[in-house]
Image 1 (cartoon, rainbow, N blue to C red):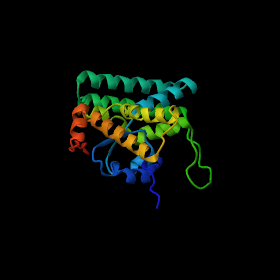
Image 2 (image 1 turned 120 degrees about the vertical axis):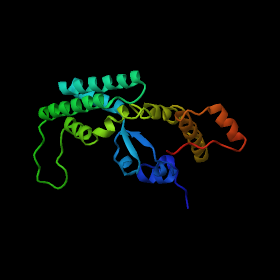
Image 3 (image 1 turned 90 degrees about the vertical axis):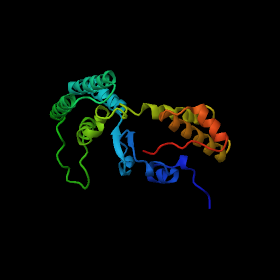
Image 4 (image 1 turned 60 degrees about the vertical axis):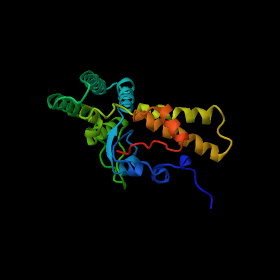
Length: 218
């Protein structure tokens, strides 16, 4: 039976094949992809994605509420960096209140389409879908304010996949499936250790000595 390469899979099949995210017990920062929501861990949303979407709504759709939310997210990010840790309950309440008020302004500018009468969810505008996501998952949007271990975005994770994409698109791919598996396993292992603050040279030395350091799963 031919073995499926985990790197060619998506969604739950990929998660099961890798066997990492299914046992992850920390906080997963992601872009809101539905498959991630099935994982039993704490979730946080990437605000770099939100900034891009809000910029589109502001510049292309000319909706001022989006710029107001951009300003609030960036202000909170800078305040957390200056504080070097979680914000006070008073400041958190301030930003959460502003968040709710701005989304209400956005919803007023984007009337909800009435039920179409067809089966399934009635299609809404991109702006309204964004507003709904930001409201429903508000805790995940602002989680970076309450825990200094939670980053503002998942950019560091996205940077880790650039090398494989360059290898795939520019270098013409890999000669063998085994080579692909080995390359991605090493890159993934080192990227995880880097995110957890490990000394990569020391980790590689121990690995070649037969005692590879194991990443934390929580």
